[in-house]
Length: 325
Length: 170
Ligand code: SF4
Ligand code: SF4
Ligand code: SF4
Image (tube, rainbow over all chains, first blue to last red):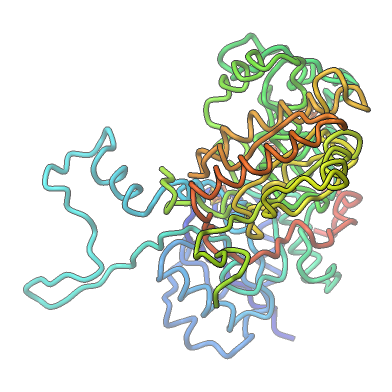
């Protein structure tokens, strides 16, 4: 019997998810032995025409990382959807919109201005922007164009499974691939990670008080971080209480608070609102002015609480018509 | 199609307001205003919750997503919460939430927290009228439509946790 065919693709991605596949180390040999990689533009020379030549559902599964924010990405994922029996959204960007999704706090014009005009490393006095179409002596060229709004994968195509994480932990990737190969798949739409919060398996959980009574919030560089004590109890914005497990508490083990890349558990609809709720209620103050002052020390609530999930939040994007930045 | 609620008979914009009132104080006050036949702007849909501290910020986001132009929250006065601390919890959450909403281009005036005790029917009347006027001035809230379904609501691969990599047949 021929080996199942597998594809990997990236959209608006940082490359970290591709790196995570390489991080499988020796396990990648087992994966490669068990499957036939038929499309992986990041690592091997494949062209779009190779995909176009495939029969419908020819690939058993296609893993797609990155958010969707350009017409080219949309065309590619629509094409891959046709050619793959299963589509797995791979990584936070694909699952929830991820880091590129923070662009939804701005307009497309604002994003372009930041990148091609105001960036420290940019010298562009004529403010030349990428053009969708341009002419040169030999003919005409086209470039993909950005959408106004960044989207998660399931906001543009039907997705079968979600592998969370920025990037997904190796253990979960291997488990997912093996589950697919063995045909031991959960219900469609499942998030392929444990459905419990970070705190539940955190090595610091014994020092997390029953009731948090914080007087102040800190950013990691502002304090000498205790290596053993619960980070939230130290006033750091650890989002472990509302974040799904599966990364073996990577950040807390590294003495950093959880920023929420594994996304919400199944009980939470809007990750950022839930995270905000957990942090806000841990403040020990009943005084209006003091509450305002301490909350003001959280400089970027939207970026802090929706770091990985803005496009799939209930807000979806900033309300630009009402003057969003 | 003209929405009779959104555009009154005189063509004026009628904002849609969702009001979350706590059972013990503000909801009782709204009841009192009703029995006393006080009239006030009919723009708010009142949702009774047991305590303002039960108000998950997700409910507020969901109200805006589903078409509210403004959200009003009513709880007991400081010190009077039936559950002692719930209204302070609401205060902390809403203070931070307003800051976050402004980053989304949503004016903080669309979200209002008021302390109204069970005997203050007249205050319900006043606040409902004020809030309606305030949101009317801001105009309708248009959020970009989105696919509402989210994978977080789906089932999980529960056996992942119990299967460490070492034990997988690799
Ligand atoms: S999920 Fe993280 S690692 Fe993967 S592409 Fe997005 S930003 Fe990069
Ligand atoms: S809040 Fe953070 S540091 Fe504290 S127990 Fe939870 S995950 Fe661990
Ligand atoms: S601790 Fe939190 S931010 Fe860090 S890898 Fe795990 S889920 Fe992601």
